[in-house]
Picture 1 (cartoon, rainbow, N blue to C red):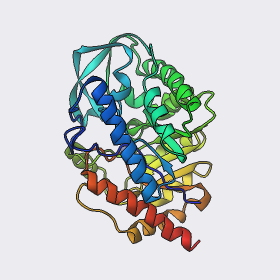
Picture 2: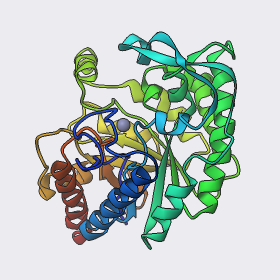
Picture 3: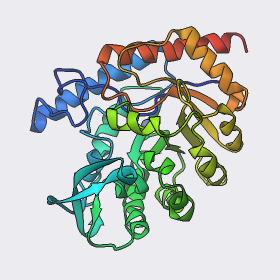
Length: 338
Ligand code: ZN
């Protein structure tokens, strides 16, 4: 009951990559980089076990970015052909690479790191992959013509990847879809269908993470425009509740999402974000416990998984470590009084 887990990334130690940055450059190359990533992942797995996290991750220590860590091994993308794209519905404009032919996955992308991580823990292991819609909102298309068609092509290769990872012992595969609360109509038209294709045939638990993004300036400005109550999820939760996915991960601590919206996810496990991704403050276990208890007003305890709000890659290492300790301690406080 109330098994704890993480939404996604953890910070990289400063000997591996420049800290507190998205897209931080690696400090190693080639084999030395792989060994360093393994060491960083092993340390995070140990930290999670020592803290008491029940469903652990490798903290995404092997990828430079939550989308591009996957895309960099995919063929059909011209990395030098940059197209200006206003991503997340023009929240920020970025020069992105361009899909110029059919996409394919010549080799498994993450299998080696999953085997490494699986061998280092007896606990349940969770692994994150970018969702098809979010991939399509991160890369330009000069081949498929329709975003939905490109999403389905990526969903096919995500499915091949996910099947291999599940066969290697991953217990939960989560697709990250921060684009889901921006393109609500597309979610219903083809976003969930693309996730279904990505999950087809998987026997492990399947999850989707939706969120309002890292605490970076562009997102903070956008959040200021969303009003006092964030109700975007209200539009997509009924469709997610009817989907074939097992779990939904969302932020809850410090968010202006009305908790009652979680009541729309009656058929799902809900990973409730109970620590914020703020860079400067560690919540006390009592605060975490209060967030979990508030969520329990809308989600049955057996379907509730206390979790981090979002990826923590841009925040200081020690703060993130403090947060996972508080998360586990807060959940333990609630469990004691169940
Ligand atoms: Zn997130």
